[in-house]
Image (cartoon, rainbow, N blue to C red; front, side, top):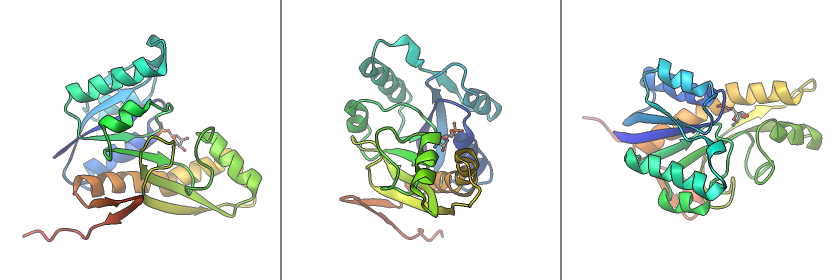
Length: 213
Ligand code: GRF
């Protein structure tokens, strides 16, 4: 079982998608060891509690800067012997020490088809505002490995979502979550835990399912 921690900051709907997929046996060879929240008020903590998953708070407000906050998260992950880190609606960019320590072992979900609408400043509802402003007809979500540069790591899975004439940033955000994020994030976690992701440069190869006896 791959010991997995989910980093959250808010509502935790992506965390819920992972917990539900675990319950339905859709994620193989994975143990959700911990949920770590950057805020004590995050509803994601209640979701963890309801699922019987240990939840911890590393409160961003109690650290003077990003470096100390990152170090505290790393310490917690190391204490728990975490092998895979999933960023599920986690709002903060951590320092490069985080991506070095957990190199090729951090998965993030981003609400657009990378390389469109990603990087510095593209987070949360702003991603959908920018997509509508630009006039794209298709958007979606991307599950990817996290590297030093925001949203630029090797892509694991993507799923497209159509933009409708009457979409607002809010309606588009909701559809992207329901139709794409909540589907591909649990799938990406399972593929990692099954040992089926092979990173070649910036390309991720998905290896075929191992035949069970
Ligand atoms: C949404 O903005 C989604 O697009 C982004 O994270 C937010 C959802 O957060 N990836 P959560 O999973 O409900 O906490």
